[in-house]
Length: 459
Image (cartoon, rainbow, N blue to C red):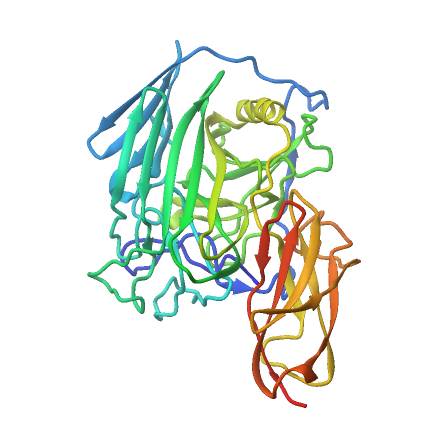
């Protein structure tokens, strides 16, 4: 199970505009039609020779402007800024070029920020209006527009730092309500740094620390959510099969919020950009993400949204460190900055958990005798090393892995040999309710635990 686009964008207190993820929808329950894409040239005449923009010379300064922490890169022609709102946990409310801010930041739900989800939680389709909204730490604040307090902050000559304990997006049912925000059980630390040789780019390093002893099953995370003003409604990306060759990019427009789930676009260069008709806007590069991005447009609310695809299982003593880059201005120049980063950084670190689904048995099934447990799993930047089947949180055995399973209807260009299968002897367990889980470990040791599958054993 993963989160998909039924989560509505966040607006003002329980008018419930919501951001861009949704409650656990099965990966392949419904095939998602891809948005129509238009090939457009990028990089000279659309040739396939890699070229990199020469480094530029700039001066970096940092400052505090009221409640904003600001980093400014200044060249002979451009002023590029990134701003963190300390009243909202240090969420990014400004990425601007020469006075034009590309970020939409009208409230605690719509800016550039991380938010986290639990594959075992339930989320309604109206961002908590029914009170059915699970674990959801959101850096900026909650659905009643309470801002997350910043615990600590620091400026150096070349960095901005914030530390905050994000609020639960919906405090109702968690000990709070409209006038009482509820801190979550995670800490988020952010460090913003300039990118050497590239005045229009900023590196965002994020550290997540889980303070709780509970477990939050594998789910799609917002790392980060990206909201831009609605005039930036052309989504640019490279979706071909020859990445890092300056091959032509594609342009699309995401569906309107509420019309249909946004598609998972294939993005093997791991970047996307929301731009206007002059090709200016905000580009995001997340080196370690899965090669997919999704989003929606909401011009009635003055904002458009996208996010890279990332998965995490968050357990006791869990910590996570990851980087992404925000780039202001023309997306063609941003792509060349990304090419330079790609060359200098080398292969991206594997920081995200495996992606997958338990297909059989379905939740609520009654099992007897020997029964099959099957599904699929794969990891973005590492090989799957083992798939274990758990009954009531205890390992029963190891599944076979590597048979063909086609999931490309939802995840374009996903690998083929990713199916697992296991024969479970239910007679070892007493009659009555039990919980099955699939636990996937990749070659780097990252563990992913898929959502609970409640079943009944009857022998």
